[in-house]
Length: 245
Ligand code: UDP
Image (tube, rainbow, N blue to C red; front, side, top):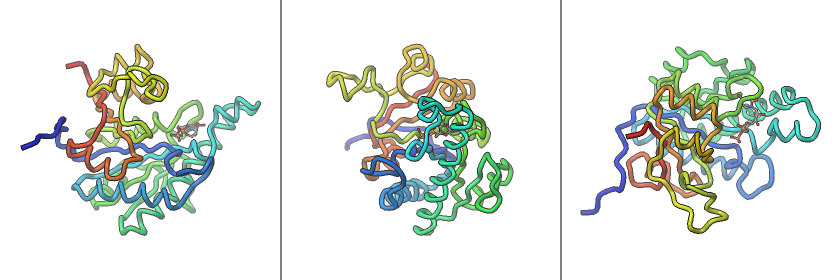
């Protein structure tokens, strides 16, 4: 009988972070509804394993503050535009999930009461208890941060058992696998190694917040169909960032 390579602890509640880029599919920019539907299906499959799910989606497919600042914009102003981009992505994902019959609520760190709720932790708890997916938008609600930090913050305050980071790479490598064919993927790696060696997982403030609150970060490829649900049962390919054994 073949055994899975890695058996994850039984998660009850997880936070899934998807970068905005996964919503643009093969486009250079924006939202491709077909890809959003595909991502929504992945989230639905994960939810059907019995988990409570919080979701954070980036905004890089629409606007990144750093890119605006590089072209001469005021950084804080550009970051607020980036945060608004994450709200658009959250609404697109809400639409796609609800078309699949998954109940959702969007809570934004920048209040926008015509389109979504503000972030209210106890209300989010109630949504999760009722089986709704809660999509947290606008990151931490402040410039000079990213949605990775937003994801780490919500994972901590919602007491999630893990932060699952879906990217286009299937884990954390010791060097860039796109440039170095001999790059080695870690099965597990410590927070401190990630920070000391500047490995590309999430930005340092997000990794440190997860470390200080002992939240494992599971890095996996969201581009492979069905991978999220496989990762959750220990059969997918991923790297887990955790405390040193
Ligand atoms: N942003 C911000 N504060 C936050 C979260 C996001 O200022 O708490 C801005 C920032 O400009 C960022 C943009 O929103 O570049 C989009 O988010 P991010 O780059 O994290 O998106 P991703 O790379 O995950 O698609």
